[in-house]
Length: 159
Image (cartoon, rainbow, N blue to C red):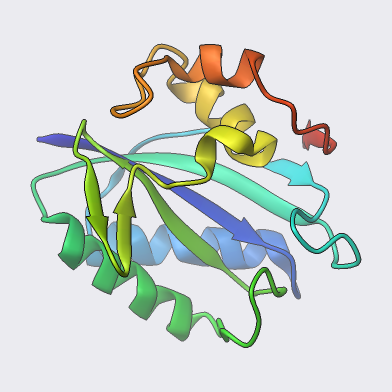
């Protein structure tokens, strides 16, 4: 079984409801969730005039291949009304694969570890809550080390 960390985010509509619906669909379509962080409210990253996000990291344990997980989470995003109109645009739900065990995958539409996670407080705060000692497969640092080295000063607060 592989530890798979996903990041959920929502900044449109009933954000909390979209996150709960995403979790329900992930458990139905992929595998039950092993562990989940608290929900955090976060200032918008990359587009500062957008509404604040809710973010949460979840842990799955599965042998499902990464490509199939990606297909399933993209389908879940569509079911929950995700529209990809602009980079860093607001969304009902966003689901990113952060890690798939210690795999390093660099394909056009699938990059694992997520290429920006080490720069983002909204990712590292919830991830460090449930996996502080997990080691980034390419940077060779633990999540807590990456969090402590962050330069990102966006406000991220547990709700």
